[in-house]
Image 1 (cartoon, rainbow, N blue to C red):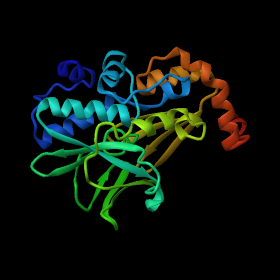
Image 2 (cartoon, one colour; image 1 turned 90 degrees about the horizontal axis):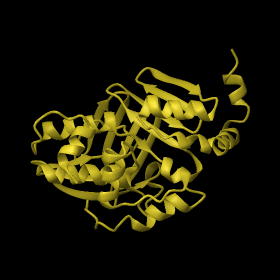
Image 3 (spheres, rainbow, N blue to C red; image 1 turned 30 degrees about the horizontal axis):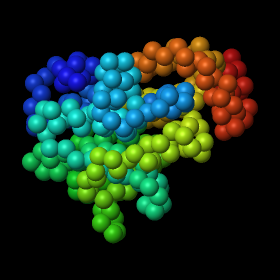
Image 4 (cartoon, rainbow, N blue to C red; image 1 turned 45 degrees about the vertical axis):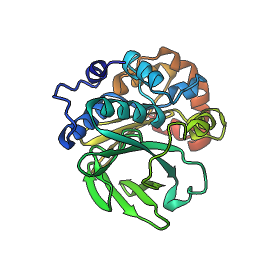
Length: 275
């Protein structure tokens, strides 16, 4: 694995130093070029948590990944540059509702004069680092809140257009193998959201582009634009144009994507496709 190849992949042209300015620039470069996506999980291909697999997929194959891949690779790159990096475990669920379940989100604790909260694998809401302390930040189109909760937990909450999403965590690094079991569960259990619904997401400086199944959303500070994809060919084109994912075999997923959309939205497709 070569740091220079990763930096070329994210089109980072600066001097890679272990300071916060560089850290934030690396985050933004990564998020603009590497999508959050679960296409392998949809296609039934095994997804590993090891950094070599993440490097091959993201750098060599020009793909994206989920938190166990993108945050693993980003943490490796930061370590290569000289940052001290630890991995944290988040429990995704509204208002701490998932604390009793196995942690299902991997993100980073980075030491850079102070402990910093770093995450390039939660879909893309966070666009720069946060101090590991109670803080509110506006990173359009999101409002970010990092708060201290009970029992030594913190809560990360992102809100756009009145819809909050959160996860709870304790700021104590976990071991490298901490996510092995949940990694398998989330890609094999039919009840897993990563099995039920295809997603690809890409962060832009002022907006967040999100594909879930047939529904393509562009989230902006002043509202949300929506479009419904009409076919498997349109899906392949959308993945390439919006997310930089060149994967023609994604068209084979169309029957299950269409069925899932009907399950969630019923006849909305017909209404949205009227001229």
